[in-house]
Amino acid sequence: MIQYISNSQKTSTLAEREAFLKNLSLPENTPHVLLQTCDRIELYWGEGEVPFEVMDHLFRVVSGLESSLVGEGAIQGQVKLAYQDASQKFALPSSLHKLFQTALSVGKRVRTESAISQGAISHSQAVIECLIQEGIPLKNALITLIGVNKLNEDVIKFLHAKGAYSIFLGNRNFENAAELALKCDCKAFRLDNMKEFIDYTDVLITATSAPHLIVKPEHIAEGKKLLILDLAFPRDVDERIGLLPNVTLYNLEDIKKRVHQNLDARLKEVIVAEGIIEEEVGKFGKRLNLGVCKFH
Image (cartoon, rainbow, N blue to C red; front, side, top):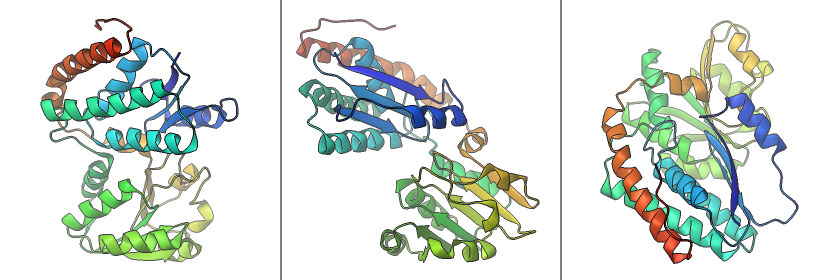
């Protein structure tokens, strides 16, 4: 039987999810799909029967119904990447393959046939909103980003759209940073030079997948005025830095709290999306000869 465990922003704090991830384990070489995002950690494993609650949950996740920003689109790609990574690492059972392939198809259908993702607020958009609300003069500010990923790529695009042009990108692998910097019209730097860059930085945005802290108090010069947005999970920035004078530090949970846009239009589309998911769960169940189940 296919099983899953989930720990998300709906049931835990950022610190609790960090602890959950640290202690998460399966027997060695057990085929599984691990979904790890800013908001959730989920593990799917097993073979054979796919319970309805597993289908319903994953279909809702892929469709953005379980996201903190309802209808956000990034989760579709994150689930796809998690599934592809697992497929490369393991010989996944056919039922897991079918479950994730169907879930990705359902996510696309929900976004095509409903307006749930129209005007959706992403974390990258929330970052720009935060900078504007903090009064950062984007056209004149020196902005440093750490981490090569889709999130930072989107942030850079939004920064350019707002007139920012002094943008620097660092990463553990300099070649990857240089490649994305060339693509996004900014400049790359080596993390060995991070302290020197921070000395001249007005805004630091970090979003790596490192399991340890990247930015520590010793990297911040005494009296340095700095706005930091830590978008990483686990966190990249030592929380003690937020206690330094002239430093303002936001983490993932802080960024979400700053989003005050009206979600009414998307929330109205939840009913439409749930109808599609219920239909798809029934169809998937029939294909697996599991019968039909109605969700409420």
